[in-house]
Length: 344
Image (cartoon, rainbow, N blue to C red; front, side):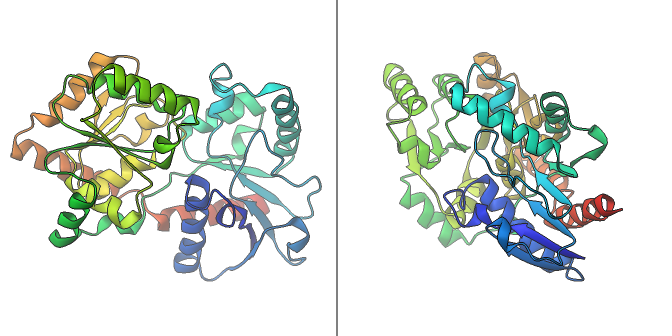
């Protein structure tokens, strides 16, 4: 089977974000675990090989025209989530956005199959796009193998020094979008005497309205000395942060998947996570909280902070066992199985 894969996400500004990481990992997994097939990367539709059996677009944006007007081959699209459409009042699209969504929706309905990251996202796609549910295929993502490795003590010491971490700390990894519930996270940690590390370049972009709100909350709560914002953190450093953090906190109102949760499990980091949307599917042994309740998030974090060494070790072991079911080998094999099903 000859598969043509759009490599646009790894050549544009999304290369270090979700769709870029997904595309890189998927391509690498195909080469490692499904080498019997051939794969061609393309950036423009005109470069799709004539002899390709199937074309895969590993990304979708409801408000930008990312799909071709004319299909020349059986086509599959990965739609990671439709959160802006699930909560339109929180992600206003404007007139142009509304028009582009209708165009993208029509193009999406014409493809031969959709891959998505969770059963929850499958339900959203079925409801909001009107796509045949039998042709929507949930395939869970996986953490990079990088997070399976225990970093050297020297590396951990160096990373802690680099980011000014002298003791225990809580960790958040991600963006500042409304659904991430960062204001709730900051408020929930206000009574906990442990610093909170907010990893993500958006935390340093004061032009974003979400970041402005976050900065105001930190100031009003007098938490400047307890909030550390290192910006973008390289993968090698992030492994060390997971390894040494008290816990990862992921208090989102809604997610299409939630990769940091699995990265934390793989790295031996306890997780406090919202019990909703796709997060409920992948949370496993995490401490589950109600994203809408500051008290619930606080109590969940406090539970981990007060763990005995034995209790903490037990939770870490359960996380390691749980995350083994999520692998890029599985992603590659399941994706190829979808290709074969689409081609009949």
